[in-house]
Image (cartoon, rainbow, N blue to C red):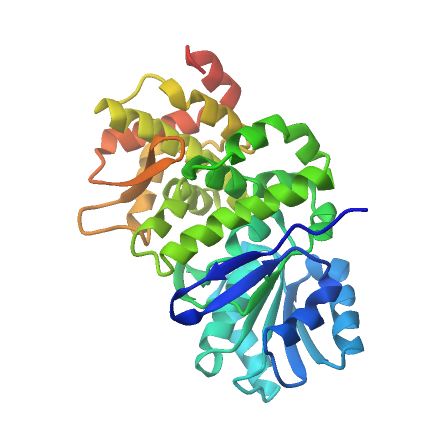
Length: 379
């Protein structure tokens, strides 16, 4: 008989804290009451992919516990992180006559979490938020930490707010309904957590990869839980991204530019981050040498792990991608800010990076991974 991994606790300043539970969706009503949610009505936001799979399980459990359940479904995909979709959520929720105690339950992956979370953050100046993540990427990363938001024509996640959830409940069984592509690419954030943290995640991922791909619960559950714990620890130390939390953006400055230039939906977020991490590893090697690196040196092992989740790269121009990074929200007065590694588990921020190093990193990441391995004497 399998057992749920222990909960991860996120302790924030001012006595605020919440738990990340790894339990069946049917446990949601119990945890709502334990978290102090009063009232009798909940708003559930899902999408048209997740809803048919999991909404019935959730609503049956809530109604059996005498909750009045209001549901809405948005189109699946990155395009739903828009002002138009946000406005439609406002109209729906306000039309129901909600009050400040009405909780918003986000059932789905990162898109639903970001969109529903931003609606919860801004409706009536803040409604209680509960994340019910159903994808790999949301269970290990995006449901934890309070980031919410939508995209703008000029860039990804440029409109948003920090709004911490009351609780997170990640049902491991929902991962079994993902496509192979969604499951694998979602593990990019777990790989990222492995590379920026001083933990045993990286060797475990490499050692147990086949069991992970087979959804072996003895491997998958603990690994998802421990990857989530890395995110929780960083959020505890730096809730509003004034310092250490920025390390969670490893691969993301490159990745967001890829998503935008390839066209939202062409690459999954995890695929874009994976290619972005390949670029960030090359940039890390260049900065250590103070010149454009010929190969990855001792980052080659990390790159082998990243390539397990990286797709074939799109045919895009490095100079165009470099220019597209100009609107990244992490830009500072001195230019683009990158997260790089001095070593695996030792991240740092790098400002004022020479443009030739950035373009070289793009050229490396946009080569076919197999060709990149053949070209590097140490890979």
